[in-house]
Amino acid sequence: MKKHYRKENDCLNCGTILEGKFCHNCGQENLEMKESFGHMLNHAISDYFHFDYQFFHTLRPLFFKPGHLTNEYLAGRRAQYLHPVKMYIFISLVFFVFFFQGNKHENQKVKDEKRSEQKGNKKDKTATNKGIYSNLDLTVEQKKAIAEKLKAYVPDTIAKEINADIEKGSPKVKVRETDNEGGFTFYGDDNVDKFSTYDDYLANQTKLSAKDRDNMLERYLVKKNYDWKNQGKNAKEVLMEGFKHNAPKMMFLLLPLFALILKIAFWKNHKLYVEHIIYAIHLHCYIFLFLTVIILLNMLLPDSWETVTNILQAAANITIIWYIYRSLRVFYKRSRWRTVSKIVGVSIMYTLGFSLSALIILFITAITSV
Image (cartoon, rainbow, N blue to C red; front, side):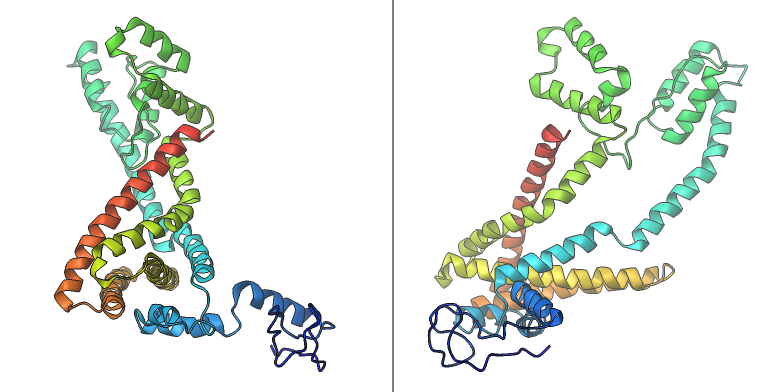
């Protein structure tokens, strides 16, 4: 949308005589104050996101010239490009919104698996009941022993049905029910299964010797497990929700760490620390934006195109690896094999830092969640 400038050449903010569209004293643009709502909205969006020319002008080198944008910015040619921090905040916000929504292929796959499990549950339940509780050749003690061994292998939905049958008259042996999904376990799960309340757990702890009792942290984690259970939640849901909430902050705080790793890896280049940070921001912006495009494509592709989706994912991984290699070569100007060796070392260090940060977030979520 075209901007409307004032004909007068005095700055409305500080009174300085202007020699262009911007005040050289305070920087205010000499725009007409009496404007339509559309112009006002356009200016507000442009001023906040700098999407007026800068954003799309920044995308070209970011996508198609790896490392070039960082070189241009550090060379002082900055006015035509979006500020790195502003660009990172906006792109990361868009990326995490789509990333945590998941794509419909994964959601559909989970639904299909649940449907298949539900169809097989009735058959499994009937076979289990017939094989244990209706077998006249087994004594009650033998049935109890077999049921105990099956605890770790019987799906939760079947376990509930079997326990319901047991309550109606079968031998009083319950198969353990858990709310864990995909084999996920959290500290204290076994205690929640053994004792119906936290007070029962504490009572049992008093019966143990001092060396066998849980310490203060362990008791606290068990208590959190009981609290989640009383609220109808499980550990996996709580931890994943906490990770989703804190992941954007974690990635932003990892940027200085990534820059430090780059400074150590490329110390012979004698670049300032802030230069490594600018490169790290631009690299993460590309990866986030590129992955956002891939997620959108996955959402648009039909469910039956699983092969195409796999090929697209493989191509995305190869593209990101190539982009990292090319951007490092352009920015740090190292040889091919030296750049490859640096990529391996930096990747290992960054993965360790990322994993440690993720564990810290999960731990903080576990001890602070309500």
